[in-house]
Image (cartoon, rainbow, N blue to C red; front, side, top):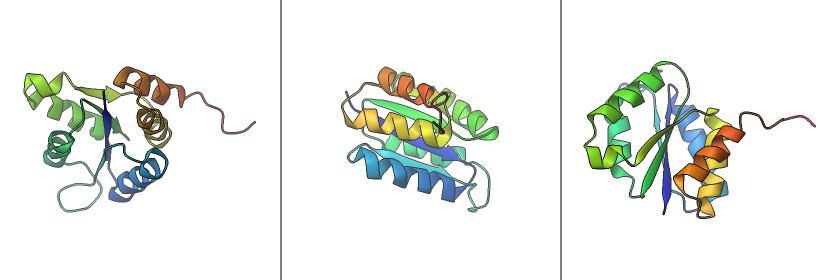
Length: 130
């Protein structure tokens, strides 16, 4: 069961940079970056979030959000999806960059959505210094 990622950030550069990082390590995993408002400034764009979800061709879709209204926008978009698609979409409560990276790597090994979300959540407690 393939799992894809949608990365929602207030910043176009953060979304695209994180997507680039995930693609380099996760290869064939489908990733969509949605950053900024409709004018390209800082913010979020529910229409582009919805389009990214609908474009992904995977069985399950994980959405990573950076701060505040990115979560609200993603939640609003999910409410508007048809039921069949909504059941395949999961908001992930994890660090944006580290969580997306961890989820992408395990998704590339064939993990299902639940396993990817667990890897993303574990990124929260992974120490950076040893």
